[in-house]
Length: 189
Image (cartoon, rainbow, N blue to C red; front, side, top):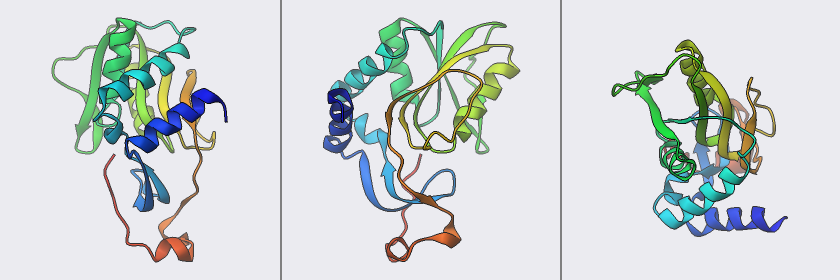
């Protein structure tokens, strides 16, 4: 594993952001691993460092605004915006669907980077893409801390991840016996 990848994994481990057990993901899939990126957010030094590493990978993208889907992307999105001197907005859940509120506007043609914490299937990211395009904006790229999709997500914009870790996921009726024996948790996304 390359030094930077090991540094990133160490940050997740030291902040207790990588959990092991039996979890129901936001996608409805079950997994023995869960990224609780909010735990990383307890350490602003960790957020600052992860953002630095992510921003290094974004140099080819042209954007003036960062949009983060709530809740997962809020802290990272704000720090990426701070480090790149970009405008920062976020979308939040209204009736379990993302929406722009609080007076946030998107100008026609505005170049926007979406920043999210973890992608498994990409549902929240796609909702953010739909919001931006629905307002006439342009999705300049999508940046995530962790891509756990096993490269199964597909977007019509550059997709950049800081860390790719693919842990198995299962439908509720297809759990392996060892996972089914562990009490299920839904830590929140």
